View 1 (cartoon, rainbow, N blue to C red):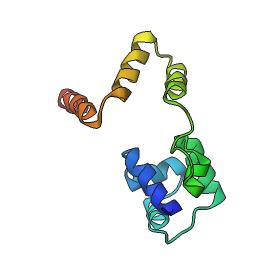
View 2 (cartoon, rainbow, N blue to C red; view 1 turned 180 degrees about the vertical axis):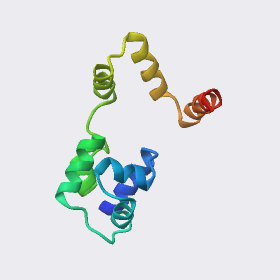
View 3 (cartoon, rainbow, N blue to C red; view 1 turned 135 degrees about the horizontal axis):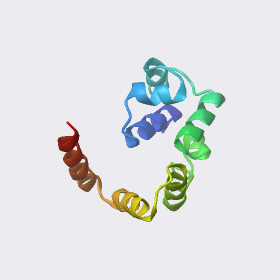
View 4 (cartoon, rainbow, N blue to C red; view 1 turned 120 degrees about the vertical axis):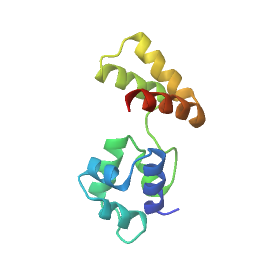
Length: 117
């Protein structure tokens, strides 16, 4: 798998459009598309930006070695809880949500979509 293919895999895993993924990195959707299609190489600066912004394992992105993400789920939840001043109930809700299957999460998302739209 190429670096571009790993970028596409990451973006799809995060459920982000080309536009939203690029915006997070300060580039347009065309730049991301060209990277994903191996028409443009990843620069070191872009690699570091992706790793920092999405907590991606540098060696996974550059060489395909190791896990996609650097932080363990527990440390990521800890960081989110701290950043957003979550209490213990918030934290448990987040942990439970993350432990659900994609199908179970989709049911919850659809419930909230119905409420908010």
